[in-house]
Image 1 (cartoon, helix red, strand yellow):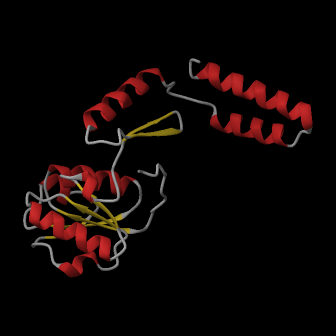
Image 2 (cartoon, one colour):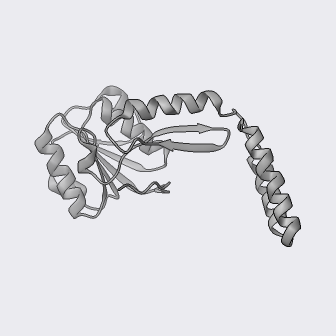
Image 3 (tube, one colour):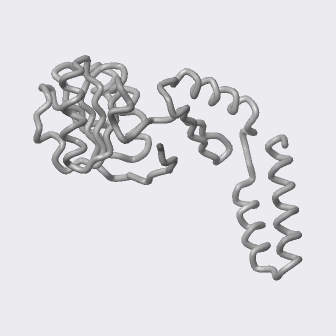
Length: 183
């Protein structure tokens, strides 16, 4: 069973073992979330090396997992990926096996950020194409702008009211929000 959660790992160190297209996508995701990313691979795509990441051009060594919070295994070698995952788990890190997600304890969902809202979509199975299609569908219906600050202030004001006034104010806010998202 999976726990759906949003994690703030800003400033933490992530290790990506692999230097190809999957490593590039993971590095982009992790750097955008504010993690410090270290890439270990004998060969690295130029686009990956051009990101704000530390690149170590060599094969994986067991000591690479020391002190990292998150590990991504995305090499072309099942043996290497499995070893990276095993050692990452032993070190207490969150681990993602790009080729066999079920071997890790971290999966990367399809993400939609729009109007100040972040939606993460996972199928719970190995069907990233379905999660991506659902993200595209939600993108087509979610407004580009939502008045989150105004709604937050409105909610805070409603919570300061007593009894029936509070319920009425929260009901009005709920109706406004539902209308804004097309319900």
